[in-house]
Length: 543
Image (cartoon, rainbow, N blue to C red; front, side, top):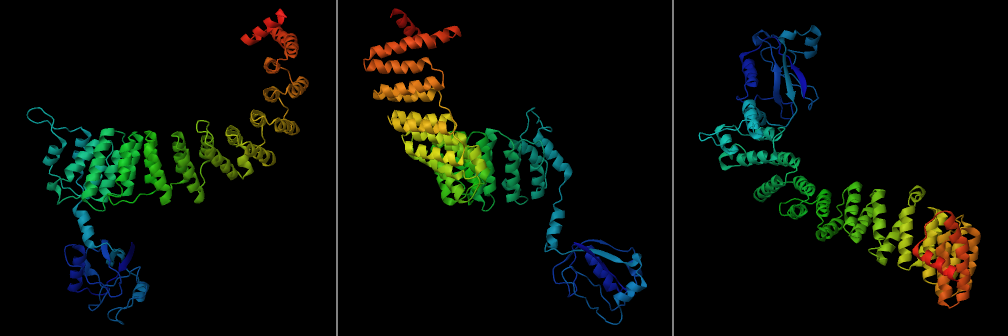
């Protein structure tokens, strides 16, 4: 849009006056523009002098000239020599004798401008409709019964247009249910000539209704959109259906959301990443996990993954529903597209794969492989829980070699293993009666600055006693006496071992020692004895 000045010179013939009148009247024929104006131009606003006949800049033979932003080259006068625009500017131009017009370099036809003005919204009628839909102007018939919204709208004699319908749909504080009633009324056959459904108006309706969380209204909206989509082509869009799926998700109506998802292709809409995300969310919120796998499988095969944050949410939804394999597939697809999933979601997936309720070796090894993605030192620093989960799971499925290998990686690259990780591996080695490896792990633990505790010694002693190797157990007991305070449980382990081998004299010595050292200290400290401890103490007194 720009302003150009049209300067008329010397005398203005009656033909010129007729031309100007043509511009002022939209119903008249359009003027013939200068040959230098290459694009269709329309006169949108103008200012002119009160007395056009007083303008005396052009000679009779001269015509009005236009200057366009599209055609920047100079424009020749009709009769060269009689007039020079440069000379006239030098002489000065009287503002009272200037005809100024605003020219729009637009391809919008004049007819559309005329139509927009012809369909100007009647604000009084608009206010009446909005008040009716808000329930403020409910009309009562002769019998004292409240009239329906449709009958009240019929009596208003409205001049319907898309703009009028849009104004109603965009009004504030109008219930979604009443907006649907108004929209259905506007689509009735009697209003067909004045208004027909468009993508713009239907989208406004969907947006307005989806702001509310009303189950019944959401069902009515879906039925209306489905009916329109089956009759009209190109009106319903993927974004509209995604909004409806999201609405049902928030209402915990997952099965209906899945129905909308299934209807996407039937309504000539193409599924996108948000379609899959909202559908998975809706199904998981309603705990309908048997359909989730189908949706995620199709999502990964189509390669239509949402943004990283939403992928993380999908992974968490699937893990909570026990679909850890599907969650891992989504993780791999996102990794292949170099999508950076939130770390909290990755951590949750690892712990879910290592869940003892699954106890699946394949899942545990998937979690082990995921730890390779913690290549950054900063990430490994805060991943001690994930590494601990994997080591615990590896020991639970008796893959001790992989657990030891991961422990060595932690020692070299971090995160530094704590007592719990060493004890987990030692416990697994003792259960498998690999006592040499268990003792080696205990020495490694000491060399890395982790002093073995009561649990470590008790586990190794228990491993020796199960094998019947009381000499080895006695060596560990003596080491424990030097490095930590003994507990009744440690004595119980040794006593049971001797009794199983029928070496009652050695068992009696340990009972006496426990009664003197351990139980005596416990009595001084005022600690309560457990039932087994009391029984042992009573047996000692009887000896």
